[in-house]
Length: 515
Image (cartoon, rainbow, N blue to C red; front, side, top):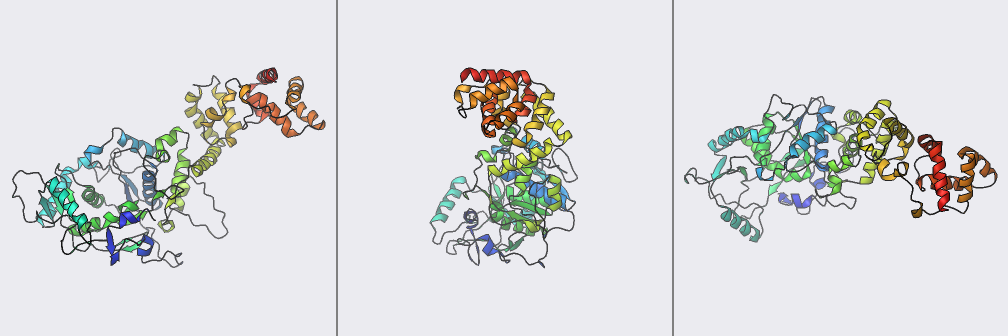
């Protein structure tokens, strides 16, 4: 929660929020909820939305937001909407919108309404909705709840700098100079500002409880939190488009990160200005490293495309991300299994099980899930066939072996690999010569063991040499030295079955040449 305070400190609740956590702000204490606590899980179908900006590729934080909105919709029999918020035209990244669609599809999050799927409440790309925003901005102008502002950038900068010097300081800077100056500046460029209330209405967050977040004013030099709703290029700001779209698209629940909590009073005020009922809000905790530091967007751990390329399965990634702030309830005496499919997660999901603390991200946990999901897939004939078909084109770039060989290899090696890419990174001894010069001879009995195996075969070697008193460990290590340079993961009988007796004997002979 330490990372959240700088985002919330701009507001106050009765007293300042400078030293107050969200847990302290909530009317409900952080102690476990009594059994009689009213459930926050909707009993009617929820309409949720994931509304990313195509200013970069999806990362873990964005995927977690998308997933929780999807889970809430599907667990209630509702609809999951994808809306592209591309009003910041200067920051758009080529290919980012396609990446959003492709990532959601890869993860199995089926969109019900969106830019590609269509729907009753489209268009679902904000740049295609300019006329809609202009219409509602004009409503606020006509009712006196918004006004045109012609102030120059230099003047606004001066206002910001002067606000910082006030004692006590204020975090709202505009002085309402342009109120009443409607259309007196001819063709000058202007923005539209919302005339914010002096006191924002309190609101309920389904995770954090009742909150009242207020601007910090300096009464001797009064400034106002009159935020911009329409930019001078005719495009709406996030705050305005977000509210208009959520209302028109009949969104019932908004699940988003805690970084948007300080903006929520603005959104509630806009809903009230229009006479609209706001959706229910759920602000989920930050993602942090194991050291409790907020994850940077530059962190490799956040790059979903990189994770896919490294062999992470979508089932494992979704399972991993689902537990970033959600703790499924264990029934009395039930042994809880964290390894779940998306369908199983949907069935278990409830808002009542969301947690408030920051979610710590560990790649080791992700790869643990991946190993378990991969093993399960390889045990299913249909899934095994699918993996072989998808992986074989790449497999063929470093191996001349057939698909039948890959089938057999995956059956043998499956329980010992974490990702499909481990074949190439850890088991290249199967496809190339072993460099014995880089491998330490395992024990002083190695030469004798290999000579015996070459003359009598592996099974007889195990039987006879153990009778002679040579430890099984020494026998295994010696033969493995010859076959793989000591790399484990594939049993010796499986190796012989894969490579054949001839290759088995050839490698034993090559190893003897260096001993």
